[in-house]
Length: 192
Ligand code: ZN
Image 1 (cartoon, rainbow, N blue to C red):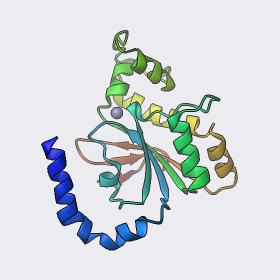
Image 2: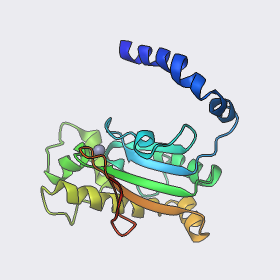
Image 3: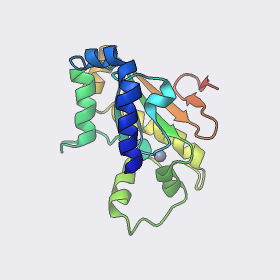
């Protein structure tokens, strides 16, 4: 905890004054251009990877960067998507998977999740059916594409897509190299 309180002190002393104008603007403006849906994994930091400033990204992070398909029961992920798309009007959505994902590893390697019922239930939102057992990188990619499909079942997203005011992107971030692969842009690498 001391690390965090030291960090807050450093932020207030060094970071905040350097961006004081930006923060003053952000106090009354919330206009992110992108909804970034990533994994909760501590090593995948959306703003760091993309060089985004405060205010740029509306972020949802879930275990395995999973986006459940739209359902009638209210949930936090669906509400956050609806808010980003319908209320804030983001123009882009990125679903970002990553190397070494614990959630995808558990699925690909068939880990026993009987002692972790919440995880077992949550991971049902991944689509692991057609991936070779044990192939984690393949499942990470396939899962990103499956989550883009789930995303499109949300009415706010479907409406924005139909009106051509929203673009969906699937990325995979490699922790060891920092590279980002764009699965939806002919598979080309965004950054080396
Ligand atoms: Zn992960």
